[in-house]
Length: 487
Ligand code: NAD
Image (cartoon, rainbow, N blue to C red; front, side, top):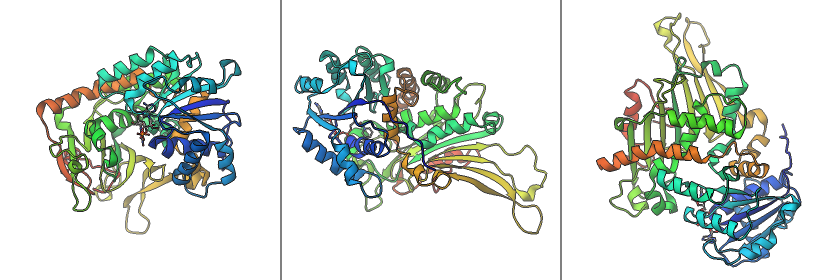
């Protein structure tokens, strides 16, 4: 099945930090794929803006190398790459000074030319206010301008508020696109399609029929080169406050009246606001130790006394009619035994088994995999084939996108390219609104303050394991077990 590609309007996309890691690994290879798919108009321009002293040719060469290195599998089409490179430009710009801004202004097309103008802030967060200020003061911010802001969006509620206020001095909310690339994943959007496009699931999607919900985002890698940054942040700030909470919102929200940005984001916000504070006994924090070969967390971050968590598991509740008393178990960590992200909706057992005790008790599970192999599985109970009575087994009704839709399904799944095209189209549905971000920090801040006040240390866990034993206990004591990765 070949996916339909609708070209976007002409645009000038300025990538501040256009020579950085994120731009080279994700943003530019993603744009090249959109170019190859025929979605980028010929008169679209991508303008790298960073500190390095480069000219257009130097930048085109750098981007070509990045695409060769980080573009998806398969050979890069040289002819297409050459044509794409022609659409690239570069200006050396200082976010903290006035150098380069006039040159950037000259390169941008006038408002009358009806070209979408977007600025992607792919630089460290300390530069976000400087960029916003200078875009405005150098006269580059007409009413239709959009800005794309990378994570982290604040470190706590206070800093997120300050940043929101800072951006709001120069841009209105309709112009601000706060990126969470989890929302750009095909499966995440499919979650909404499955929930709201089928009659089958929504009537069962509540406390009466759902036993509990699990969200796991497990990584095998450690903190890598991000040590000093990560040590100030930890798994709660780095993963839960944004990615896991966004997934939780999409799973738990009420059906919006329309699939439009504010209708969806209003419903997500209500979920965050209905979250109960979490009991300290329902939070397990962990820190990986060395497996003899790779470093321990403390070695990775070069802080022998660090109390920052590289793993967290918690149980929380949403106090509303739909979800009262239904536990949501969230878990994420580094250096675990597998790389897997899964949302599992675990339904209740049937109220009565007509097949007798020997047939066992079974629960349907809808598993939504974000990686690897994006797709969904619905576990159903059937009779075990063969003679010998009525024995029941669970089998998956599987829908792997690659199998069902063909190889093109893989082609369209990269989150960044989809989200950038949404920016050009002016669709904010998959971007976080300022009040959502602040509400998320309002929920996580007291939890973080709680363990800091108590001086709690994270539990050590072996690199390559499923995390600390206490995390298993957190769910096992409720008569349930984790799914998604090996225990
Ligand atoms: P990086 O350090 O690799 O690149 C930083 C870029 O900013 C460079 O192009 C540099 O020239 C430019 N820059 C720095 N100071 C500047 C100044 N004064 N004026 C103009 N340009 C300046 O960083 P990165 O890893 O690409 O991350 C960029 C942003 O994206 C950060 O906010 C980061 O948190 C976020 N992010 C990165 C990743 C990732 O995988 N790298 C993932 C998610 C979010």
